[in-house]
Image (cartoon, rainbow, N blue to C red; front, side, top):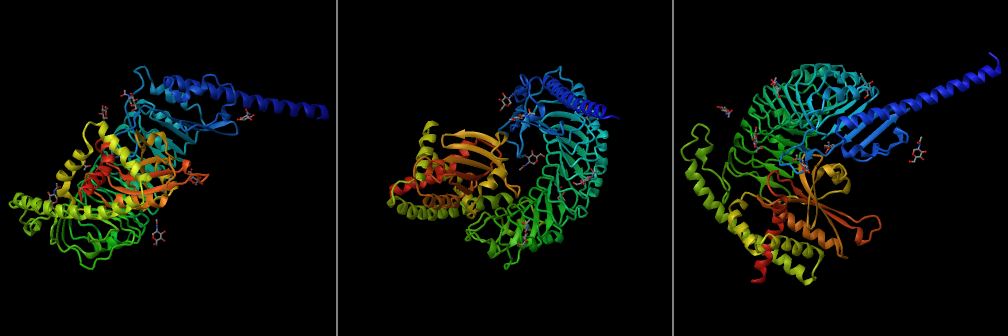
Length: 594
Ligand SMILES: *[C@@H]1O[C@H](CO)[C@@H](O)[C@H](O)[C@H]1NC(C)=O
Ligand SMILES: *[C@@H]1O[C@H](CO)[C@@H](O)[C@H](O)[C@H]1NC(C)=O
Ligand SMILES: *[C@@H]1O[C@H](CO)[C@@H](O)[C@H](O)[C@H]1NC(C)=O
Ligand SMILES: *[C@@H]1O[C@H](CO)[C@@H](O)[C@H](O)[C@H]1NC(C)=O
Ligand SMILES: *[C@@H]1O[C@H](CO)[C@@H](O)[C@H](O)[C@H]1NC(C)=O
Ligand SMILES: *[C@@H]1O[C@H](CO)[C@@H](O)[C@H](O)[C@H]1NC(C)=O
Ligand SMILES: *[C@@H]1O[C@H](CO)[C@@H](O)[C@H](O)[C@H]1NC(C)=O
């Protein structure tokens, strides 16, 4: 080959390469335009309409993401808005509320999709996609992440999906899939996240899952799974197990040592809590409530080094706890209520400690002034008869206890507020007067509201200890709300936006964001927030903590305060959230007549 033909060859291959690139860009853009048509022109894809640039250069937004590797699309993310943002469902994600029209064909849609052959990440969320998921999805053989949450997919998971052996994360939350959870899931030997929450899966928990040793997260909550939960101790990487609200009815199985979050509430698990759970040293969040667990409690679960949340309410747990029970230093919430426990309440669970919330009503503990049954109720052989009489006595006792508690609370608040009054009107008081305006808008005077709440809810105060008020970092809250993503936005009141979030330990929270308008003392604010959190109440939303973000310039105009509340799954958030302040207002009103 002479020089000139060599150069010609170079030129030709360069232009061939260039036009191939260019062609593939045009082709992929055409495919996206087709997908847009299939999806009935969702606003998230509006940008494509007049787009004539390089597809791989499309700027990403929270609702649309296109990522390329060497001019080939490898990631496609479209987050639609066909969803109910404020749902009462305790799921941590939105529920779809609107399907694409009847002429939508999932078969042609997936056919088009599979022409993007190099896709590694595919997220199509809340787009109203309906129909059975076609088998041919397996043609996307490079897929590592597949997320089709919050759509209307039904039928079973197609068996050919087992060929997507590179899958790392499979998320099909909030659809209508039914049939059993496939036995072949262990073909996906690289799977780390399996999330099939809120579908209609029935049948058993497949034992093959125990062979996918790469799994870190298993979430199958809110389905209709029945039968036995197999021993999971082989899953040595598992951090999160969420099987809430199914119908599993075996004994509790062995669990792997690395678990951080275990949520098994609202099933029919029976038998004892295995002693092995007292050795799960990474465990932070254990929820076994609303089951049929019996026997005595292994005391070692209270002293686990990382445990912070322990919910054992509404079971048949019996026996007594040792008085010298040790509690882990991070333990902030314990719920033992509605069991058959007898004996004394261990001192580390005493209500006088303001470090942890402890609930223990509805047992037969020998603590005075608490809502407890008589001992015969907890004598498992002799249950029924005395129940109603016990209740009546219990309520009377609780009412008296409540009254005593309220009076002492009022005294505390009075002392506190007197001090506060001396230092003048502060930002916090401005918040409160704004809430007052909120209530005036509802047409009822805040005094009436506050007093009504006091009278009707007093009886329950007795079972309540004081909670922890912790300082959250902005990063934690960003993590919990997916960077305050619009999908976590719940609403806006006159004093700030409210977001729903999920803390790392699995707790769902409502986060209220306030901007500070005036110069004020952050120190005063913090004291006040701690006070608020101590006025905890079962029917008011508890304040778990706060975060003060001073902004970049450190000037007060960019300061934001985030209040982190317990998330209340049912009801009107505004009522709930202003309720807390009602309680405080009530106290304030009382003070004026002191
Ligand atoms: C990609 O976009 C940037 C600006 O956003 C522009 O400077 C660049 O030329 C674009 N590249 C191509 C290949 O279109
Ligand atoms: C679905 O929910 C969204 C957001 O809450 C709302 O705007 C829309 O009207 C709802 N659609 C239907 C069909 O209910
Ligand atoms: C599994 O994942 C690892 C790293 O995450 C990767 O190196 C390996 O190639 C993957 N295996 C398959 C079959 O995709
Ligand atoms: C799944 O649901 C479809 C209708 O939505 C029904 O026809 C089918 O029988 C169900 N399959 C199973 C296994 O329950
Ligand atoms: C328990 O699950 C049932 C459905 O299985 C549901 O109706 C009920 O609300 C759940 N209870 C709680 C307290 O979540
Ligand atoms: C709970 O367990 C007891 C035995 O410990 C059993 O007699 C009872 O039927 C179970 N209840 C339910 C609702 O499963
Ligand atoms: C659990 O506690 C130990 C010791 O206190 C600590 O080293 C470890 O990092 C903790 N684990 C988690 C998941 O926080």
